[in-house]
Length: 69
Image (cartoon, rainbow, N blue to C red; front, side, top):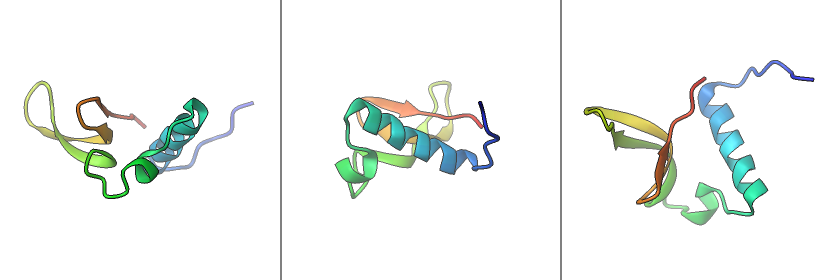
């Protein structure tokens, strides 16, 4: 049974990503890189089509992940 999700996109996405890391046996961003220099939530990023944007989760040289609410 599904329950209504009342979290904001930011809260929901970070909770989901942390749970995904735990499921895969990986450390989430705040444990892996406490200073947020190479693995972090909410990172300014260049869009592939041009312009600036934000990645909900970012890991240098690996990925920029965007959730949609």
